[in-house]
Amino acid sequence: MALKEINFDGIVGPSHNYAGLSVGNLASTRNAGHVSRPRAAALQGLDKMRANLALGLTQGIFLPHRRPNRGWLGDLATTIERADPALAANAMSASAMWAANAATVSPAPDAADGRCHLTVANLRTMPHRSHEWPGTLAQLEVAFGDAGAFAVHGPVPPAFGDEGAANHMRLASAHGEAGVELFVYGVSGGAFPARQHLEASRAIARRHLLDPERTIFVEQSPEAIAAGAFHNDVVAVANERVLFAHEKAFADREPLLSRCGELVPGFEYVEVADADVPLADAIRSYLFNAQLVTPPDGQTTLIVPSEARDTPAVWAWIEGHLAGNGPIRRVEVVNVRESMANGGGPACLRLRVVADPASVDPRFLVDEARLDHIGEVVRAHWPEEIHSDALQAPAMVRDVEAARTALLDCVNLGQLL
Ligand code: SUG
Image 1 (tube, rainbow, N blue to C red):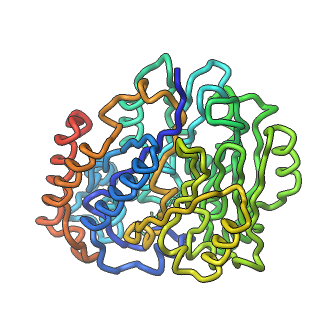
Image 2: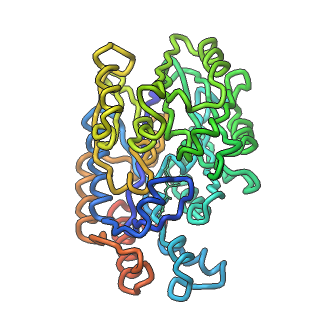
């Protein structure tokens, strides 16, 4: 069995819009009410996947959820036509595109039963995200339906907030080796919510049958949350032996670093000092919301959003690191501006799963040709623009529903409708 890193990107849904729904996510608040471009957004996402394929990485997809979520509105005793605009925006959100919040994933070498475990995130902190999990779970159960290779779990009870892989990192000498899993939780974030709760992370570690000696729980720094790092993946990312983080990412980093040093052979910590890249620049540019990957040529690569190149302090740091022969050997720049304007960078858009691709339902894996087909559906059906006051317009609702149906038919997953 050949274990590989597979990145599953959420395809940006046809209802992508800027409703300002996520307090604590500065981009979401800043862009509230702006006109969105769903077609461009989805095509940007597909181009990012093409860039990953070009690096030699294995690429997967998740599908947009049914929007508006009529069932959820029905539970609230209303409809998309009658709901007040705030509720309607919650039911129309395309937020499932941020696949890093789909689930927490523990690869097979870390689990006592030798299976890859996935727990769907309850996303209970934000109303528009709290109704994602059934649509996500339905896809996980199909994509990872091979019960010999995978164990797919339902959400942690909503008493405890769980936002999935965005608050979870894994270190290992190689993807296929037993790893060390880091769960990052929040306690306080000043004016902003700490979305990941320690009890949720602990429950996931137990469910996933992780070795307690190789599991670390670490508090996110309240200062980072208060500055807009609503998930840990806004200020830190890990890949194999490398942990890349901002100086202010963790409440107390020394014990974390010494345990990683003991447990991970060849552990390398790459820290960006606040003096070089202030927290505000790190958050605005999403330097850390990058995909840190090892393509087949073995060169550790950081896939950053174009905002990182546009932020002088960040780009100067990157150039300095590359010139200094640090662990990150290559930097790729991708344009995901439509997603970024809602606080979702390259890392938010993907769920990383380490598994044998042959054990995954092939309908969730893509190559260039499949991306071309998906691109054709997007060009034909995704709205060009959405004005935030048009979310309940009957024609818009019809177009959004028809667009998703066309995509699910194209990828032969119509049963998820
Ligand atoms: O949960 N934005 C998402 C962004 C998620 C980013 N994911 C990771 N960091 N892994 C969120 O805050 C904005 C929606 C709106 O305002 O319309 C939103 O949900």
